[in-house]
Image: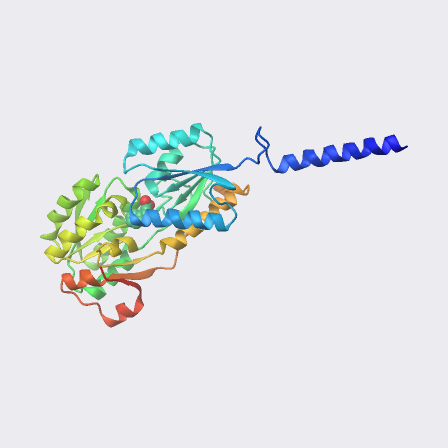
Length: 330
Ligand code: TRP
């Protein structure tokens, strides 16, 4: 009888051990295996860095601290398409548990390398038009994420409150960034309705930005640049040229205002980074990426640059100043 009980106890113990090891996968050395998250970022400009930092902080707050529950492999492509491909191939070959892709070009590269590893993208302006998802509500496949869609029309409505009388608007952007093209289409539709003419200056990389903006300033009353990674990477030079020519430049993102753009009506990228982390955590917890709807940030905020206004002889109307969530002074 006693022997029987001992055998029963031994079986119970064995079963308990087996069930434990089933929920906490162990490596050969007996340690709990952590999941690996590859983060790919097209380029280091202030806005994308803010998103990444805010996302990593929020992941830690949600129980996924780097070096503990997860291991993060962060790679930046230095604004180079072939680097993007190499990075995403490496993530796919190593069969990482999750890829977080920051900005549209990174997300397109990641989606091109894997249809099985879950991808959460961050700050993609137009995920449908960029071919990343079939629809915002039901992305399908292995991919979803956050969007920073803004409205060119709303930014232009702010622009005419600050500098009325704009007749010709310059459009400065990289025509191969699908995230920019959709906002420029919105700008053209607004211009057609409002009797403005749009004069375009497109670039293919950040070294062309100076010449492009220089070519615009003598032809237009104001310049518009969307949430464009290439222009954002060259913002100091854009500021220098537009301040010298005394031409207002309206932009798509707060960081571009911080670096000298006159104003925007844009999203908060710290919030967007946190929302990206929530989706990444859901996937790490077992949810399917393609079943999560794309999260769009709908609270737009006014950002202004006072030093640019002074440099070009513009003063912000009181109601615009009151609306601003942030007024940069440099
Ligand atoms: N929305 C951009 C994209 O889809 C990425 C981005 C986020 C960005 N914040 C920005 C670009 C600020 C320029 C400036 O790729």
